[in-house]
Length: 525
Image (cartoon, rainbow, N blue to C red; front, side, top):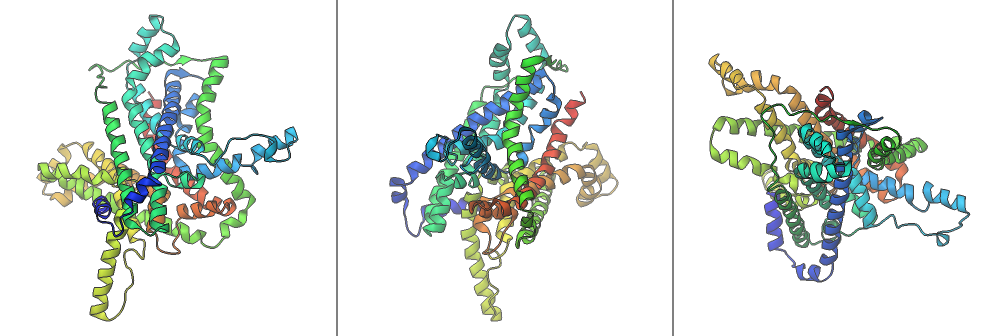
């Protein structure tokens, strides 16, 4: 419905400003979006691939710790990283203040310093926050490869760089392309970083056209362009993997034997892995934590507790609905045995590829129209005005979260069902259990861990979601994410710090779960 509503609004605008957009701001929006996505994808690929190669192929001091520390930037929303980087490197920040003190400079005219609020800084922040997608997929691909190929290459005299470029990189290319495509899609969907740095992209254009120019049709037309960019990125990801199919032997592949590094090479490898971790996690956490300690009154400011309650309630309801519906739908499809439900189920995950701002455009207009019809009907029947039930509460936000993150719940539940031996539900049915009884007594107890993980992952993503929440929230309705954005936009990081720490704390729960699932089993081998 949201995606269809976007196209309907774009094709039937009340006031068609597309020619005006096309002749004025669309070229700038599009170019900036393409540059942002390409730069983020390239830098995230370099960071993630390099880190995955080093921790997979070499053994050096602190490698075990860095192997899971490299995942931690996933807990820090990119917009929090933007606030921290700008505060750290701005004119009044510690870096420039120290430079002026060391060299005796008195003003900005005495020296040159790169512009922090720029598209280059936005690329650096986004890549530092998103490289773990590349790192996770590339590391998994490298661990699935046989160590024999690398041993043969080294026996033939191939050097470390040649092994990486001629063997490791081609074999891991599908994973690198997939991770880079995810990072690029997230960059296209970002609003917090680009708005704070003043970079005009297609996503900021939706906010400007809708909220400032009061033109929903024009916002929908820009949203269609974003959807086109996302489709191109998805096709590019498939195109990049089209001939990259590498099969292992039926035998257990020989594990990769890490080469031990000593001295300067070991130090350089550790620094190369620590750099993205420092940019994506240490710097944001240190800056925000410093503000939280320097301004403890921020923890008792009005609105923080209410924002936290809104975040927990909305995220909790959305997580329960998302995972509950995914459980019912996946189980129903498996029971039906028909082709049509199996073909339709993947369509429900399309919302994950659509940016939050695009979904907000497609949700708010139809729900607002439905809201007015419900209110008018209730007024006629009872003589009282109920107000806006859907768009005047958090219902629209919950719906957006459900559409946006249904793919996470569906994927986790589907994978959990496949791990249950078919003989167990068959035995339960032979003992007289109906379909509901089999689900309750057999599947759910065995899938309890997967269901809990899905609930946590969806909840964390809901807590961090910014664009959809900004556009769909009622007046004077704050969540932790919108509170961080508003306070930081006013350069009030002291009051933004508590909410930011709470958001990052919730994110750490998901990262810990992810690290346990992806790093734990391999570490024991």
